[in-house]
Image (cartoon, rainbow, N blue to C red; front, side, top):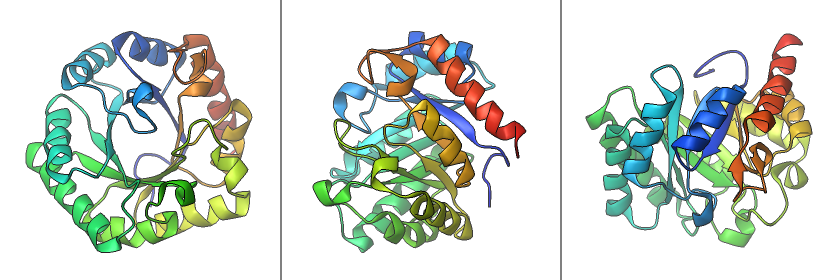
Length: 245
């Protein structure tokens, strides 16, 4: 089941309102609030999320990273606050959390917490393709847990942003299998992990709903600044894939 559209959408992670403006100008479909200096899923402050939401306006979907779910109560409170401030979806990772029951409990509590603030909001559960280095839940094992717990979608990413990219770790067949399995569970399937311009066609061919980028949209890498021209090139590549379907 596709959560948004039959065509893959481009998500650009931004750290503040100015970057959000650049991402919208470049043609991003989804604006994702994230602090890249704090790791793969670094969370922005609630006030920053409010500024991003105001800058983006009502048309674009805004998502927000929560971080990894080690401190359960703190992350639930942050999730509710970010939904209050305008995030439609919040993303949670599981670095250091490999117990399936614990993962399912965390997702369920976050989903209920978000829905209590805004019934149209939801949770995206994140697995890391380089999980052997971080010791988190396996990407395939996550799928039935996320579906049972009420997640809106799943994301496969990489935890080590200085290491190999997703498509260096997974074959096209492996990615296609994961996306297909996610859809079979009724979940939106998002893909990230040091994706480059030329990777977008592979991700689209695998059937992903969302391709997420940060470094490829920036001048100076993922800790640089989002550039509208770079986003425009990425958006054009996604549009090209749409036109060939």
